Length: 476
Image (cartoon, rainbow, N blue to C red):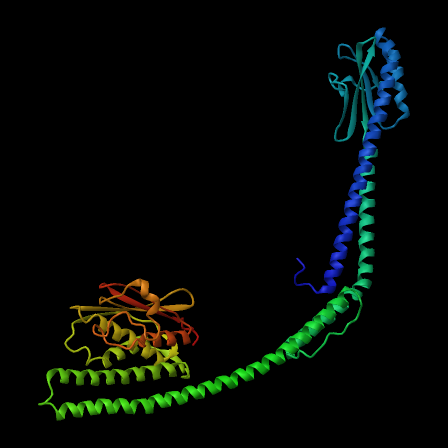
């Protein structure tokens, strides 16, 4: 209710609400008590008069002297609030009435049981006339409630006046006292705003009082001192870690250079000399020797490919991303076109649906598609025809999902968690060639774009590889 109200007004409002509630409750309790007391006193008084009239009417009813009964009722003329009264005989007939000229039809046709009841404008009392245990009749008195109603109004007005005056007085007092309470809190709030705006943790709040708010100010200043100290330490550690990271990057670059130049040369020599040896001893070397040379040459080539893949993987995290709007349909078509030589002689059924555009690095995303599509082609080469399905769809409000499905060799789902790791392969090299780095590159690229990767498959029933990308901003 008071969430967006300034603290000064909150304090005044709280004081007024509390004061008003207490006074209202007190006034209601007082008025209720007075009304209940007044009603009880009125009932007791009328009952007493009815008992007196009943006691004085026994002889009149016993001797059927209506004149004497009327005289007894005439004693009520001293109370101007008595509207009407009568005495019923034992048959329920109006025997005597007050005032004497009141028509008998104005009274109830028959008396009710002894007691009283409050009607909208009157108090009605019935009292039996008893002699020697015999009921001779019933006294009826109708009493005007004007006095009680006037008291109601008077008490209500008085209670309202008291509440209004007390609330006004509480308002004046709150206006005077709220500055002493709110000023230190407002000063503390202003200091917090300044620190948030300027990021200057050396600022301190001014202590205005020695009460609880003063203790809060001290605690706030101690917290600022600790934050200032931690901030300075954090900046120092950030500089230190940055320097260490820069050194590690330089070492990694040096290692990459060494791998690229120093390791490639021996591999080229091994492959070259194996080829020279094969040519010079082609007629003298036995078939098993020729096979050994082929193994040496193939291993050197595989080692070179592995080095290339490792270099690509190591550079993947350092490559600066150039985000643009990427047409995924064109990117997939381009990848398939570049694989034309590998597709010669293959019977492949392509099922490619329209793909959504994304915002990303086109060169890196091309590597993703090259790896996934080439894997689908490779692992389905024993199928005729091979079926490769490529899909893209919106998956939730914030991302789009892409998938590449084949009907090839598949894999056991219990090893699905290893697929995207470096050097993790689920098939022998004799079955399907590879270095086990392609899918690791896919995951690393997609993670840099803020997406996810996973796979599903069954042995000899094919596999499906998924990745997601953040949904393209419509305004971009």
